[in-house]
Length: 81
Length: 460
Image 1 (cartoon, one colour):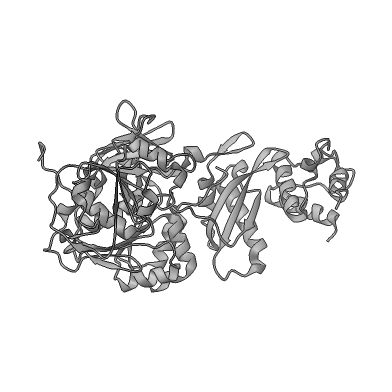
Image 2: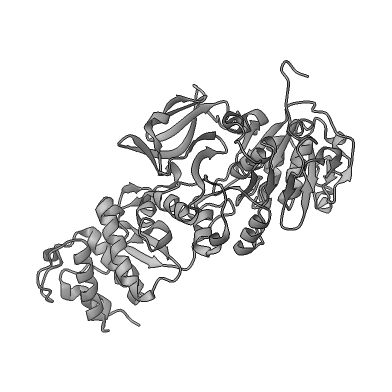
């Protein structure tokens, strides 16, 4: 499974659990518009860390938290192996 | 004799009750004629009036030494097997120890302890001793780190609940416990066996659970106690199938509904009760209605035990509590009114109080306080879950999140893991505030249990 599809699947799974009505996910969608609160993002980051072995927001001190879904996916795609 | 008559353990043992034994995995000792035998090589006289450290590598000799020393020594300090040796010097100083009973006498040469007595089996004949004094029993608290505190008890305080309950009708019980008898929970069972005319089968840390249960069966164990973690491990092991005790007791941790129901299903013919006790607060009460928590009307004065809830924690005053912490820098054990603060947090729901966790065990989730036990109790209600542990994990976003490690029932189809995980999260969402819902549920093969029988909480 590609990194992108892992991230998207995790977002959808957490949305289901948290009863968040997700708008259609596109790269331009701002994370704010996903309807996720900080807890939902914390869950997302933790689950992705378990699945991919990386937490791109903790490794790098200057990593700004992404603004859009596309930025978020790229944060995982661009982690050096 | 002092103003009122003093009873020691020896005064509860006599030749009139035959067939009583104290046994471990290797040896069985008759309690019927134990008073005319000695585990101390006949050197009990030398220990009269002394402050004795009981430092033995097994429970059997420890129990036999307790029987001999009670009523003779001024005080005796019981060392549980997991005591960190680095703490021994501080404990010896705090308790004013001037004699040691050990099975490793070579270790005690040149240690400054004046008198070293070797405990040995087999027992050898001796002239029965007479009770001289009320011996102070010193027990160590089972805190997680640092030098344990020493709680001082009298035999009267230690046996208050046993005497109050009285002896059950029917054949004398054969007691067993998963605890070590040098800890409060285990000592209670040992004292029950001595006072109520029964026998006792000791645990062995090196024995496989299936072998332990086979031994309990072979010895006809009828009454048995352990922590909920001990019992969950037994239920998971499959060894419970051929075991049918009359009485099953839980103490030392929160007995949640799942473990009570699990035991009821595994032992349909047994009485199942959970008891509330701690080294400091003594035995508070027992609950025998099969439900978690305890009726709200247990508060107030009941059978000589007074209980109240202040700032969410259970406070107990009774003649069964320890009387003091022992040592130079010992803090007060009770408040000015004589109440012990148990540190166990309770919550009133309807007409019942429920234990939610330890005050010291709170984890911080994004600035909010969470008791891991409360989350575990909800997870454990899932029919496929045998045991769980909730803890906090750092999060770059909220500071902390709840994660749960879960052991599934034996034979659970791995293909159902995803479905079960979703059900667990749904169940938690339905019953807990959102920040308490585990963000990550991991399935694990085992969870660590401390030597005191409690779920290990290294991060708490």
